[in-house]
Length: 250
Image (cartoon, rainbow, N blue to C red; front, side, top):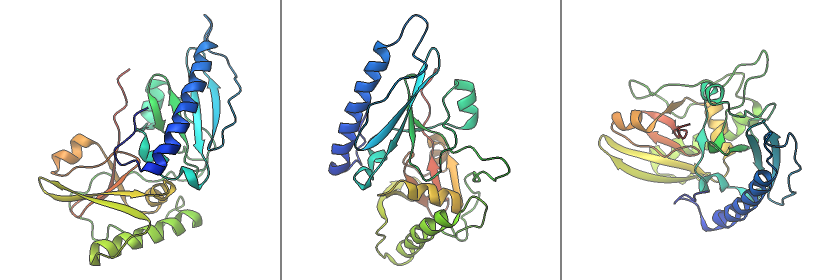
């Protein structure tokens, strides 16, 4: 598991501990493999900083990881994470967690992919959060809170504060306590990497604002750059956007 350059020293300590615990459990799973495949069930170790759940899938397996406690905030900034779209989940036969609240920062490990995140599938009769493309022209209000069924009261509360801070910061240079903001130069101007201490803030903003989903190639073609999930990014001509990590080739 690779640690990213923007991983803080405190978060890296927690991430190194969790990484070691996951590796130890993965070794136990591999040791339990038989010619028939992996065990259907297997007890996971009890950890202080996260909960692990094993899912036997025949010739492979998945481990869902849910960090807990304020000490684990910023953890996701320490690992390279992929985001798996529904079509990739189907094509690659990836495990997709079910009935998980969007505000639980859950990631999944599979040996063929590594660590990845799958957007919560919509419940029957409920709207899924909307996915936008990069806009053709600069959005008039990139920090507006939109009304939708997925922007719940909890999400709206988090997103409203986070977006108001960003609006004030980019208008007047005001401090944005929720965010770590890093400016980067690119061919067409400046883009900003936005990292909250709490990864659930990004989830709330995605649910309650206009956030485009793009790739590194696409955003580079527009003359800007972007940090991959779990970071959020902003450029005045593009608004808010996230950059998907490319899944490893099968």
